[in-house]
Length: 401
Ligand SMILES: C=C(OP(=O)(O)O)C(=O)O
Ligand SMILES: [Mg+2]
Image (cartoon, rainbow, N blue to C red; front, top):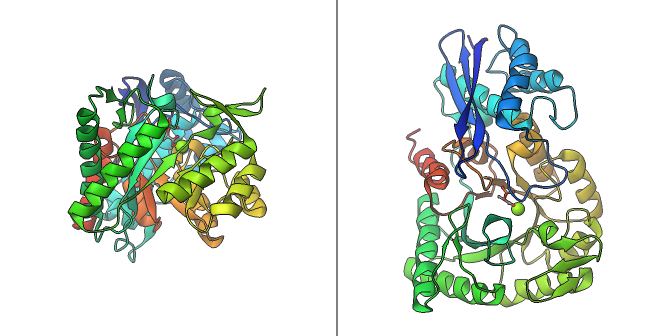
């Protein structure tokens, strides 16, 4: 029933206005799935390769489509993803592009779900999934590679850890985003937004901490449950390998100073989450920081692990972190992303399923998080391509997908 009969690929716009790959997968019995690839700006060095959309589409039409059409069942995700790997023939999807691969992988999953008449999370995770929801981490102030002339730290993330429901959590994050705007206005700070919809004021990190801490505390008082906050430091973007230092606007920090700085921030602001506090090659520094504060907060590897089980195994062996960011396009297929989540769980690591800074209306990651019982999802706080995922979580909870 789910034999793939057609794969159609096209260029569509992402949220930055760049072309990205959209895939349609059709099946013998009329099943249909459509998905589009997201795209990063602060990409990790070890990610699967995104090719320019037109080239990725041409290569996938030549190498992948013939291995799928009439050959593979969309309902068998492992076979779909194995066919994509075989068609590509490289370790990093540099032939057909991880953007073509992930779009086809996700579209096939949706086609499989469509044939079953089941919600995507249930097709991916089974009938006993759908009761647990991830806590959404929402970017409310940001800079780094996502906005010019803004904070050094890439993302200040609201984290409504005490929310009684996913809808309460989603609205709490939007309230923090709105309260940050009020506080910026009170301080006469005009600003626009970065790529993920976070405010991108031209302020230093110290002032951003003050504002976000105040916003979180006000919203916590309003909603009556615990709202904390966290960071994506995107340490690899700050790190200068030649000098071995982290370069902030106002000063440099060597690795020891960077570890001490982050540990102090965890203490001072009771941070619940710290992503990529250190460079993507420095497992040892990650391990030192995790040793120091890993019992108080999540230390999450994004550029460190790039959703790659080999890198995660190394991190687990070395005690480098206690959580992993999961971005399907970093590794190229849903099967690989699920393998990383399962390996993480078996080793006591929390998974944080994540959007990219360049996004589309695609909501697959909301289903992936619910399907795998992931404790967190990072997908912004506002903006259509972000609310696509957040509203889908609310629909899943409402049994309305
Ligand atoms: C979402 C992120 O940004 P990008 O997609 O630019 O890598 C991130 O670094 O976690
Ligand atoms: Mg990151």
